[in-house]
Length: 96
Image (cartoon, rainbow, N blue to C red; front, side, top):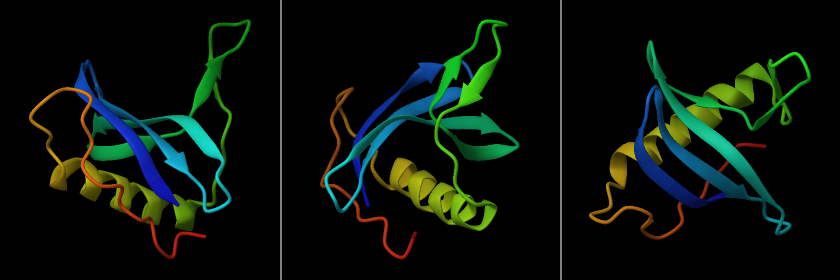
């Protein structure tokens, strides 16, 4: 898996949006880096009829810990000068 695109900005508690590309070529859009008790990854979600957000992607707790570390490292290591620029894609090795 690779981080395909990352948009950094100041969206309240959300610090960045990013997409992931699988080795099979599927692109999963809508991941978020969120600031809470430290930075963590929010899964893509949709708003239901009651106004609650429901995740559309699920991964195990163990894999989410690995995924969060890799995504936050990418966020911290790659601070582009211009909004919407992402340096070379970073492999998310040994995730799944």
